[in-house]
Image (cartoon, rainbow, N blue to C red; front, top):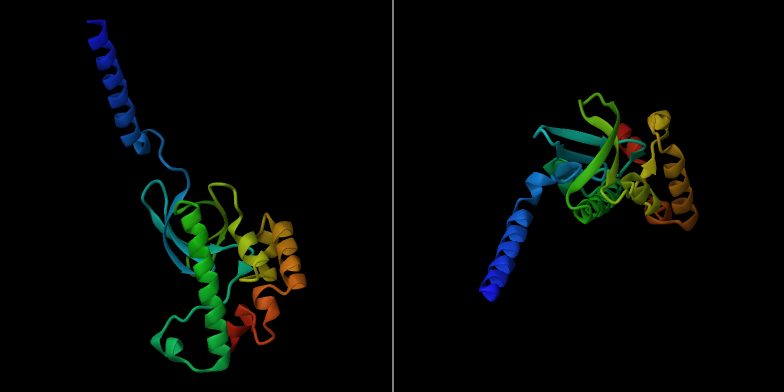
Length: 186
């Protein structure tokens, strides 16, 4: 009798644990916003906890452009190819970071832009500051015209100085054109 009660108790506990783990998402929902799409090296589409989707433009920085049209994708111009190559690298690295963070990010919204996007500092659930990583790896540059709206401006400026000194990424490419200059020329 004692032996049967012990086995029943073990199975009962195991069942409770399994059911509890299956319902963990409801009991303890994941924190942060769900990343639906990485548009380029500095723009995400996210869904918040209420199910609202919106576009997020990264505060403090500007990443190289990616091609948006078939004409741009097929362009053989050296400046286009260079910009789009670096843009693809920035986008790919951002996708890796998002995946590393479990497809969730925490946003500190600082503004909105003329396209209706939220402008935000973006962090992974472990606290990794995404802009700092991209800039430090030479995959983006600090965007100074809006730096006063960047709560972590010291971190991004320090990351850029290090990337520039070490000639990482775009800092080692003499042909690279700043994204804001590239867009102005287009």
